[in-house]
Length: 265
Image 1 (tube, rainbow, N blue to C red):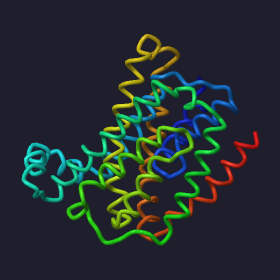
Image 2 (image 1 turned 180 degrees about the horizontal axis):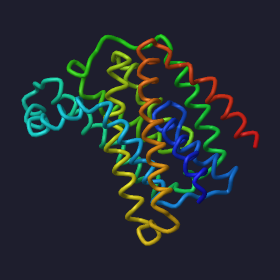
Image 3 (image 1 turned 90 degrees about the vertical axis):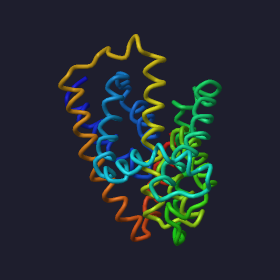
């Protein structure tokens, strides 16, 4: 792989992983247009870069959740929880439908995950969800949100395994529809996505471990990961600003136009 391609893929991954435009959909489009199939370990490097960006931006939230993890299950039994414990509970509950749907698609409909037609339709659905989210959002924070919202957002996250369906777009919109403050829904969405990304990456690595390291040079690995980390951090900051300003739906026209173009191809 040429360094320029590694840099380009890192930038695209960093932007599309967190912005509500579907990173998997853009990867499918890129592969069809360029006929380039990045090695598995390079894809893992890109995901590590975006996770580093999210980890740094949400480091206080993650530290609080880790400290609260031992008491989260006890609090779930007792029916009381502080904000950090409730965050852990919501992330754990969200992981259930996400894992079930992800395993199901991987086993039963894996061909859909590389389909250009599915990608186009998924982008149109994402555009509709984003546009419908304008003006939505309530006053609930993580501490006061019902636990069922975790399952609801986890369902949205699981469906986003299909290319074209944006994980951040669907989960943030689901949280806002449930009455969460837009920024609270966005931060919870990012926290929920981290174990999902790690789990999906680990599963893919186990399935294709024999060829995972093929075609990867250290320089390409580091270049792609660094580009994904830097652009991912900037994308996260920008998205949180737009969500706070209730301009989340700004990405709907882009998804709609790209979706129509992909379907026409």
